[in-house]
Length: 270
Length: 270
Image (cartoon, rainbow over all chains, first blue to last red):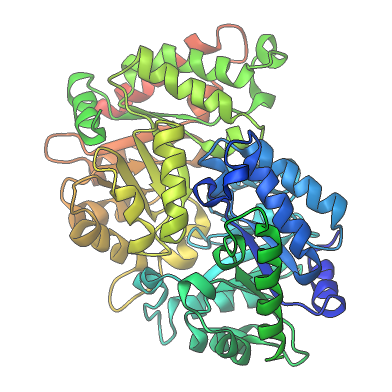
């Protein structure tokens, strides 16, 4: 699967810009799953199966698995997505960043061990720290640009010669790092003016937009700022609002209900 | 163990500023270890036992374990260090960076699952992405500042209002983020002028200095630029030059020989 091809296919044929974020927190699981040895896999699998036809991609956040010694469940989950929902790409949210020789190892972790179709990467260490991911031309490499958290401004909003640091990152990626056409950028829904600026700087580059739902970002403002001329271009992520919509045995149906509402709220702005 | 107390103890009582980096690459292991199921643990354990009295800290690089599904061997290795070499702190080189709720999970991964004494963290997402690590007051939080790779200049060397981005990071950490006194900074040996500048901005803050050996950094220049008035203040990392000094069954003795040479070359400049 080529990530960009799969993503564009999902946007158009499945009519969805919704990215379902998989941040499994066992303390918030329904009671009937709590004691299962593979509760994390089981919870995520049910969410995935209930929402796959509504999503343009899935985004498992690796920290939630690593904190609980559950890398095997993450592997099983991604295998399940590939087997059951082969047209839905998987973005591994790992935000890795290291010198080239180490980045090669992280690329093996993400693309060969976990079989992700794309990974999020931190740009602070520069081009040669990103090259090992770019060397997989079928995989997506999604660089942090303007993150959704308040502290994102500490560095990303600094002026660097007449533009902000996040604008420089957007330009570097669009003008240099994206030679193989497999880059994307993370821009938070909590900053729609910056989404618009990044869209202006990057043409039709896919933007991964976290921050709606629990973090307070606005769907209409996000869409107005970031959609491309054909009404695509965005992976709008929702994690907690979907995952924990229900607390009982019907949690997957509740997740589907919220995913459907979110997809439709997004589509109302296309 | 309080990381800063342990590190200062190791600097003074063990008379070493050498950080032994553990980047295990099975393709470079001696032949007699290649087929063992726990080769990564066994290799690192022998390196650790051969060099612990020469090191102020160990720095396992998590990517090398994660790429090979060897998190269990990393856990066993850190347990071994704590049990056999309780005065030698462990810096988990993970360069994590994410929004607060996710950073909490990474902090659990590093400090509770792997029982590391310190972690490296990427500052690009700002203060609130670092707070969850700082909330463990006994643990060290070592922020990337001026990294040793060529591409580090892409962002870190940008001018932000009369200073470079890496200088702003150093000031933010020294003047704000370090309220509990548990922060350090990563500054590459390949940039001694920047080490001197960071030392000027941060007082006696511990600096983790990668880049000697395989990456070409110079020990004398590093020491001259970065040592504190009492001849400490630095964790000078060497990984590949020590780990792969020998290719035979005596690899641990060869690693010890190079670690001793490196420690002494550092101490000649104190």
